[in-house]
Length: 195
Image (cartoon, rainbow, N blue to C red; front, side, top):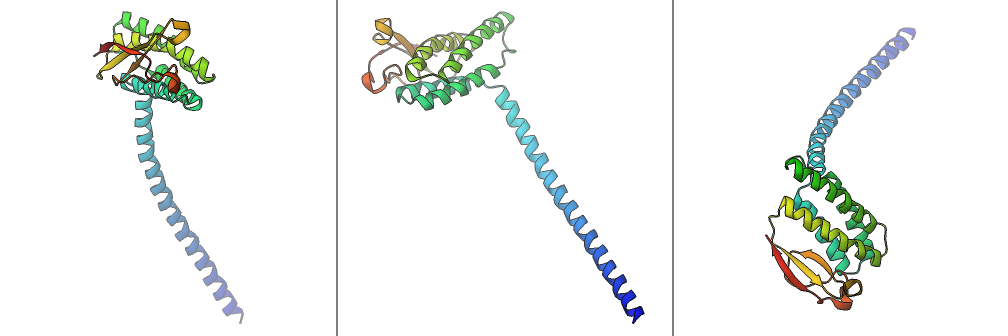
């Protein structure tokens, strides 16, 4: 009887030991597979981070247009989000491929433009529109230096800001006024085409 208990105990220990080793190997395979997947994702994320850290002029324009469209819709929340996104895109813009004079000028423009975008991200709609007016001048100045692959239309509403007027950029000729939205959607004109 003692011999049967000893044999059973040895068999039980062997079974537990083999099961533990088997589980450990299985977990090692899972970890290796998981680590490999994370490694792949890490590479993708690094590539995405690199791309998002160096936005192009296209991304700046896309973010600006999203902001303009949110203001056209008089959507304060969407304007705030678009302003925040534009702020980050501007701050991450890489100026190193430009001449030293252009770099200096771009840095100044970006600093002021990012400040306007930041104000837009935390203001009411009226204040958002005030900063959008100043931001438009900065983005226009920036486009003159970095250029654009898109045809842009500089549009102008003479009724904004106590009849001092306000300009904006658009990718369409059709007037959709970001300063008045539905109140005066079609108030304005195309001043010039930018290629």
